[in-house]
Image (cartoon, rainbow, N blue to C red):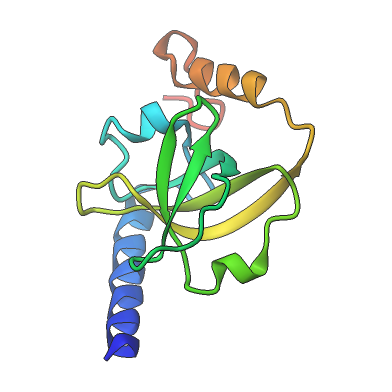
Length: 144
């Protein structure tokens, strides 16, 4: 029965990803911190979060872990049951995933990229805040 639920969940994610892919440019993932994620403006989008897995965070009964984002806030990341056994080898990682459509602002994990132990999380957070600031929006690829 759990295997059936797991399969159904993944089918729903693929359907959601396909719908979002029709609206979201290929290869573009908004870079967010916890405050940006929690606005609810990215539901159904594939996003990037940078930070670290919270200490002693193991997948709970819903396969959720706590993730410390660049702004110091936290996000809930839905992972595969074997996520913890893969291990995190550096202090900072990027997680790319789909923001769930259930209103929780949790993210379904797709990819983890290690960023090292000396990644400047403060500078990164400042950069993504500037990136989201409409005063500095430039569209290099679509001259409309």
